[in-house]
Length: 178
Image (tube, rainbow, N blue to C red; front, side, top):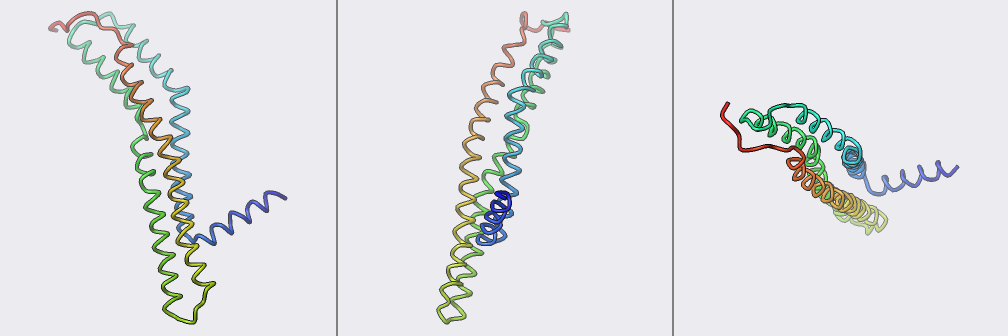
C-alpha cells in the first residue's frame, strides 16, 4: 500500500515540476550509477588491477633496460586510465544538472508569462507556473551538489592512488641501452 502512495507522491511532484524534472531524474540516475560504479571499482577492482600489474612486472627478469622502463610506464598508464575511467563524464553530468534546472526555470516562467498575457488574474495558473519554475531549479541544484561532493572525493582518491602506482613497481637503476 505504501508503494502506491509513494508512486502517487512522485507522480504528483513530477506533474507539478514539469517534464524537465524527468530529464533531471534521468541525468541524476546516470550520474549516481557511474558514481556507484567508481566506488565499487575503487573498493574491489582497483586492488586486483594493481596486483595483476605488480605480478606482471615482478615476473619480468629485466627491470633496468630502456625497454623495461617503457613497459613500466605503459603498465602505470593503463592502471591510471582504469582509475580515472568515467570521472570526466561524472563531472560533466554534475555541471549539466544546474543547467537543466535553469531550463526548468525558463519553461516555468514562460508559463507564468502566458497566464499573465491572457489577463484575468488567474492566480492558480500563475502558481502552477511558479511551481514549474522553482521545482526543477531546486532538483537540479540538489542533484549537482550531491554529485559534486562525491565527484570531488572520487577525483582525490584517484589522484592519490595514481601517485602511488609508480611506487609499487620497483626499478633497479637508470635505463641501460638495449
